[in-house]
Image (tube, rainbow, N blue to C red; front, top):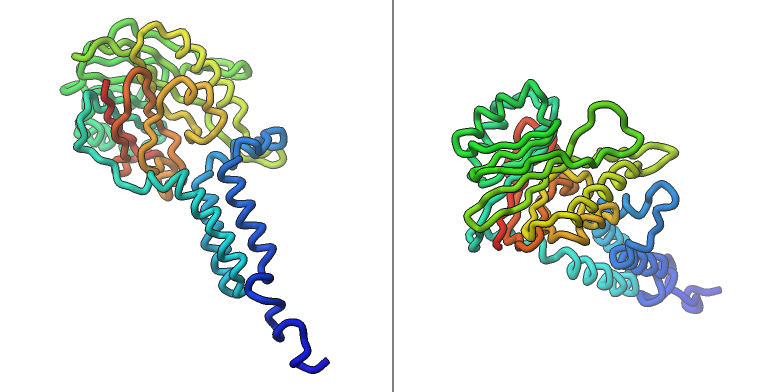
Length: 322
């Protein structure tokens, strides 16, 4: 067959509107995963929760597909990419704006997993004390480091409640402090990582919960190990549901993102502070915010992260308005 009678130009494999069908299908798949992530089952390796943990990062498929569409000279794929771009923008575009720290608020709160292997607890304590928060919630506070954090925070936060490895330091008096049992059934021994206390603020009594949910692990062949975390979230959600005070604040390392269905027992009952991305973990290259501030009968008005301390988490600050 002569060149002028070939159905497609040599090496091009069709017109720009017929080439790149696979790329166009992948673009639609990416958009589908962003919108319908909750239908991805957790039956095998908790793949649904794994996807939701890194859901904003699914958008990285778009520039990759765009490059391939350009190389393929496919108009079809280029137009199809508008779908995941639009979906990603609708879901996450609002988080690209920087936090507005000057908005009217009533309380400022700080949440930080200080890491039990922190090489500089004194430096971490000084940084937290200088942040200007009204409430400071810490996790992984070891018995050895507790006096260090206490000494640094006490001048501006003379009231504290500590249970196990979690604690709260407050400008305002704390009463009715007690543990909250969020221990998974298969964990034995001394394991206390939840507390509840009442902060007597100028705006009325606020029930403050501090929690550190179990860590996640990705291992073969089990996949995304979130079972213990999910069990603790259910127990914490039950405690929140039974809380009698109207105003509630939850601060903690919840080892999950707000998109993760494993935290539904919490996100279904409280308003998460979700402004911006401000990923908090790991500190070397943050890819997810797993440290959270959530409220009931109060509105988070701004959220941001502070510079790194000696921990593998970044501190998270939030301002709320009653």
